[in-house]
Structure formats: structure tokens, C-alpha cells
Length: 264
Length: 334
Image 1 (tube, rainbow over the protein chains, first blue to last red):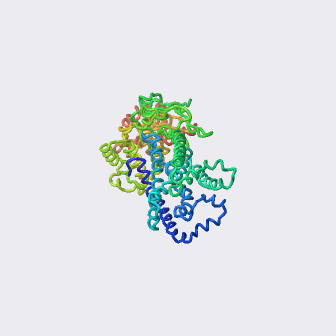
Image 2: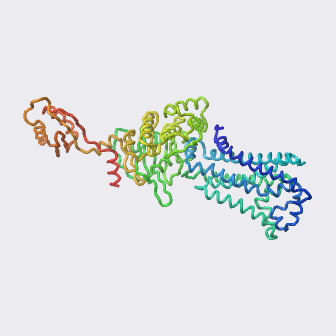
Image 3: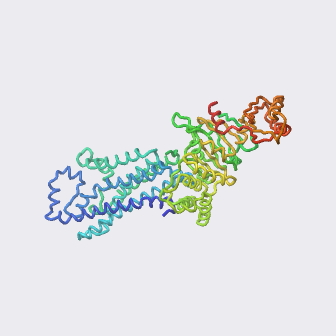
């Protein structure tokens, strides 16, 4: 596992990936296990039907909460990126700022390895770790679906878990890019957290106001939630936009890192 | 331009040089952080094969210089070459020419020394065989063979520094940049690290920054003094000590044999006072402190005179200042 910076960084993340993936996966399974009792007599459907339309819109306009797919979107998947952002932001900052602060980065940079390669391998490890968490969540949901006897194909559950990857990667990339560009961790953590929380709130507010309707398709969470393997199907373009933005954030951070003074 | 006091040495420390002939060459190297001038127009040439002491108080600009040389920071002005390659540019191959040990180095505490050196070897692109060979060599040099499979987190300060030097030597760079390698160590750790540096002598040029003068005096053959971001002196160590030597000899004498008539020491003193090179003499019992106007002449005539007066020499030394004395004098002059 220590053959290169990518594998070493991935090894550093291994336990975190397992804890996050299996932890949220367990939560997903638990949520699924509650579904059979809540779906009796369409209790959830009636409960949702009693909610104001504005609140429903804020919660993502889930069409049919009576189905297990709608139930899982409403009760877990809609806010999962917020939770996963905690991992991706802290991991990204740990990979760059923490290595600079503890001075281990100085050793790496003093050897004949280009700066871009060090950063690229670390970023690739971040992406792989996020992918691993998404996969573990997806597999857990497939397991939960099987336990409750759902007729949703396992691949749909797995894809639903993987659907969290692009937006989680985006928040991680914002933190990673800023950590690479700016000394200290507060800017990176603050900006990424603001985007994650602010984006979530803004996305919920857009349906409530006609004036905000034109920007509906230009919010981060829209690109995450407007397509779902469990409801509308997958729109690869949405994931592509998030991945492209992620790469841009990484690239911008890299450009600054190439010329930056490394000071603990 | 920064005017360093360049003391001519026997070719040991040329102040002028070229990237091809100098292990390290700085030309007008400057660094400012905001309004603070951390380093001002450093002109320095370090010859190949030397163990070069880079001396200065805390905050003098030593670490800034090291960072600029290692390419970790970018100069506000000027250029630096290490091993013939410009390290203030962006060419990563320049980093094949030096190994670097930062001040207070930190390692991945869960790794062992062997794993870490292997990791560094892989990053450098060394082949499996070469990596294995160099790891063995570095563990032996750093005396870490027995601890090589233990977690670095359990190492003493001296062991960590020795591992730091070992990793810097992976790939056999011709120049070693060591930033305060002994400053945070206890006496035993300092001894170990200085021993290791002594072993490296002849295999690589060592550029060694420190504020601990004893360490510099012990291992370095050439010394540069940095003060408030400015280079104020470059010299061979011996030449420096010679230049700042106090013109005084201390002698502890006794009369040779038994039954010497009168006080032979008093007779000797009377004879000394007649000499033109003698400036002053102080006597405390059998100990004489002789100040000289002309040290070379004094060195030539003193011992024959002692023999001539039938005295035995119990102790004879020309008083040498310590590097610390010189450094404090230079610092206060600035």
C-alpha cells in the first residue's frame, strides 16, 4: 500500500472510508427496515399529503413517498450530501493542509517529484475514497432492500449510493483546491461548508419563490437531486457538471500550489 | 549589495563562484514577507566537498535561505543553484541534486524507518534492487538497523533526525541541506547527529544551519554568518579562529631538574621583557600570560627561549577564541 503517494494516501483513508461507508450504510439499512411498518395503510403518503406544498418542495418534491424508493429519497438520500461533505472536506484538508502543517509535505516536496503529481495523486485518492464510501452505501442499501423484500433491483440501490459521489467530490474539491492554494485550513473548511449548507438551503428555497425559478437548474443540489436512479432515472449530464466543477476547483488550487511558498 | 567580510582562505571558501563549480551558489537571493525582509541579497558560494556551517541567531534568515535553496519558497529576487541546477526555478530535476532535512522534521508516525525509506525510494523512482541497497546503506549510516522495523512514532529525537538525514541521502544527492539538525536535541542526540554528519564528510557537501556554535565549530570546515537577513562573514573555520585569535600565549612552566640557582622563571621573565614583540606579561605563580605584538615571531622565538632558560613546559597554548566569541562580536558590530 506504500508504492506511491496515491496508495499511501488511500491507505491513510481506509479506516475512514470503512467507518463512513459502513456507518451510513447501516443507517440506510435501518431506515429501510422501518419502511414496512410505516407503509402500512399508506401512513407516510397521508402524512406527506398533509404537508404544505412549500415544505414538500423544500424537501425535494418526492413524488411518491409511499414507495420504498420515495421513502428512502425523502428520509435519507436528500440530505446525505450534507453529511458526506463533512467527510470530504475534512479529508481534503487533511491531505494538504495537515501535511503542510505537520511538515511531512516538506519531505515530499524536497524530492524530485513534481508538485502537480503529489497533488494529483492525493486528489485521486480523495476521489477513490469518496467512491468507496458511495459504493459501500449503495451495497448496504441493496442489502437492506433485499432484507425487506423490496422489488427494486440491487443495481438501482447501488447506483443511488454512487449518486452521492459527484456532489461529495465537489465539496471535497472546493476544500482541496483552497487548501492547496491558501495557507491554513479555515478558509478551505469555511468556504466548503458554506457552499454545502448554503447550497442545500438555497436549493430548498428556489421552489418556494417564482422569482427564483430561473435559477432552479443552476443550483448544486439540483444537479444531485433532479436525477435519481430510484425515481427519475440517471441523467449523466448532471453528474458530469458536478465532476467538471470538481476538476476546475482542483485545477485552480493546483495552479496556485505550483508557485506557492510552503510554510507551516 | 550585501558586503560580506570575505576572509581569504586556502581555496576553501571562494566567495565568487559559478553554478558549475559551486555546490551551492546564491546570487542576490532575497526574500520578503510583507514588509519584513527575511533575506537580503545573499551572495554565497559553497565549495564542493565542504561541511559548511550557516550560522545565525534565531530569526536571522537561515531557514528562509534553506527553504529557498530547497525550492519550498520562491525568492522575491535573485537566484540559487544547488549542485549546478537552479532550484529557484521550476525544474524538478534540480531536486535530484540535494537532500533536505527541515527544521523539526515530522514523519508518518505509523511507518517504520524501513517503510519510510522505501516510500521515499519509490517516490524517487529507484528500482527495487537499488532501493533495497540504499535502504540498507542508509540504515547502517544512521545506525537505525535495529530500530528499522519499529514505528517512527516511538523514536527519540536523535533517531528522528538521523532518519531525516538518511531520507535526505536517498538517491545519493551531492549536496545535503540540513536546517538546524541539532537544535532540538539533548546532548546525546546532538552527539549522534554530529557523528553522522562527520561520517558523510567527503561523500557529499553538507550545508548545515545552526545557532549552536559548538556544533558548527565541531564539524564544519567553513563558516558563514547571517545576521538580520544579511550575510556578514564567510570564512574557513581555522582562518576565522586565527583572525580573531587573541594575541596571547599561556604558559605553565617549571624549573628543569633540582638545585637550579635563583628563580629561573624570574630570569626568563626579565629576558622576555627585553624583546620587541612582547607587549605585556602577567604572572600568576608558574603560569605566564604573554601578550604579543607579533604573533608569528613570538611563536618562532618563545619555545627556544624556554629551553635556553632550562625550563620545562607543563602547558603551552595560544589562546583561541571560541566561535561563540567571534559570533557575538560580529553580531554586536552589526
